[in-house]
Length: 176
Ligand code: GDP
Ligand code: MG
Image (cartoon, rainbow, N blue to C red; front, top):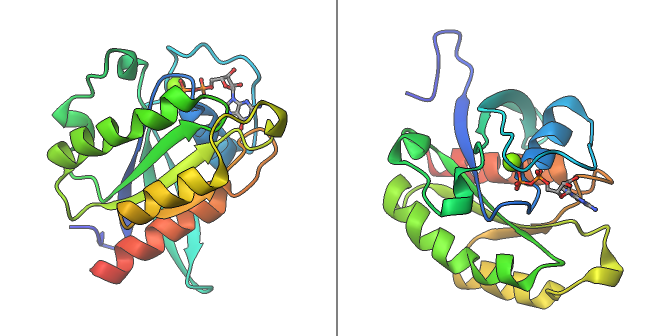
């Protein structure tokens, strides 16, 4: 299923988390290496494809899905998760509320995607250290409780974006 005719591995990854945490910005940084300081939070990009390197030599094609703002109503459809191999759970380190909601997102998404799906926790906007509202330790702890990898990222300054996707891809491949 995940290996296509030419033998390439293709994984479906979905971005999840509250509105304005930076999901679209993360996808734009990953696939276009750009950043916009004001993307209307309702604008999503469906999905984009990006090839990432795993285990130093192999490459994997990721089909990364973004929401179109429907996360504002906390209702992502089953369709969004269908066939997904990995979840990227994103909060904003300057907004404690978005961190507290991660527990809810985990419950909701695991119900939809199945518990075998790979997961990674992302604390985005780590360039905004002076506005930090969630400690690094809190993030680490939550990730540990759910047996997930954890990265603080900045879509703005391009910190840990590709690394986080590679780590998630590596974890998914290990389980195959
Ligand atoms: P989404 O609703 O989760 O898709 O969030 P967006 O990608 O639309 O981002 C919401 C706002 O946060 C926009 O104004 C972005 O420019 C800003 N933003 C996203 N990522 C970062 C980041 O890493 N650092 C900073 N400083 N701002 C960011
Ligand atoms: Mg968005």
